[in-house]
Image (cartoon, rainbow, N blue to C red):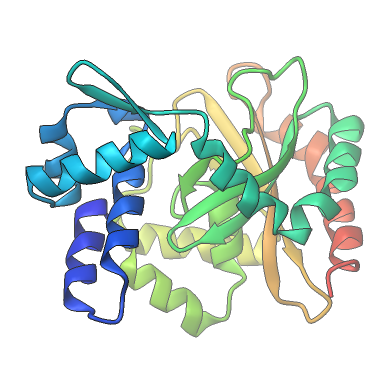
Length: 261
């Protein structure tokens, strides 16, 4: 759901606290492509009129979440406190760290734990390496379910009705020339993932980047998360990535799953 669409939903539902929702929407309006914005742009992206957007921005400035320089507004590092509160409330994140370290040490590849949040996959824990320092598997990063290997891994192993409901909400927006462009193609890819037990995304998220993911199941065999890694396609061939990383990822995911009640 886009920021503006979210605002429209708030207007329709009288049971929601509009002021809180609008304030959060202003924070969500900032992203990589909109790191700094004028009042007019914030108003446009949130669907608010300029007067309302200005009040929320000034309130967020007063609280320390936003700072102003001339006509431009940007987030401050205090916003990270919100993310830390989220991460610290997820027992999986802390519990997963030694298992992530184990995969990294056995394979030499960086690895992250991803969970589904609506139509995104979010990294909640990671173990990086010096060799693959950039791009790093950063905690808090979001990626679309349809194009992230971790997202496809989770989608593939969800109950069919739940998966179908999610797929109906997804609007494919190819991220590179290699990206799947049709829902038929995505569904076929998910079936392959079910058969093989892992998801491989080759340069669909970013040209030159190949990623691999395996599902994490709880003790009831419900998929709850995914371990994923990546490499540079020009350096590590696909078969080498699978040979070096997949066995350890599958074994550790199984052991980690036994700890999830």
